[in-house]
Length: 110
Image (cartoon, rainbow, N blue to C red; front, side, top):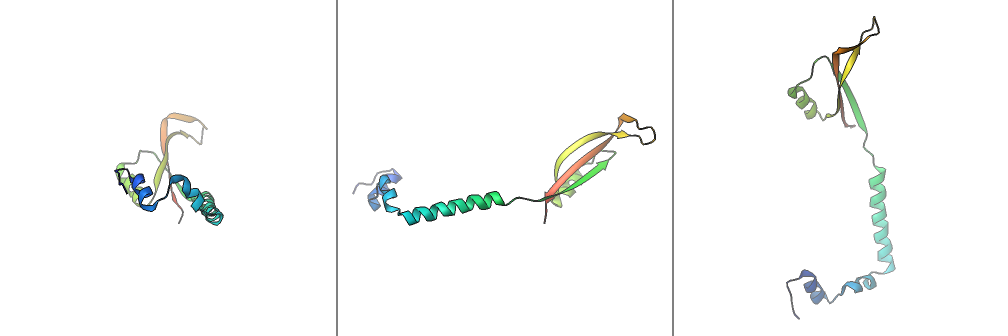
């Protein structure tokens, strides 16, 4: 028996199995069982969905790194940050200079 540096040659020489013999070795029951296991993994992977809870925080000033770190330690992930104009309630006027900052966070539901 000659052993070469190629791993596949060693496997073939040691077990006397050629690549095209693999399909002959696997009987119909084994193939069906393997197909069922693969299908189950696909169905389970597609059926499980992650549920999220969201938190919105609106401030007149930008929040700093320390606050973001505190949210992160609690499991919250920042998903959106937006500057939004303030609508004055008495005149219904939209201010372009007076802005608020809106932060939207999410984390997995427990």
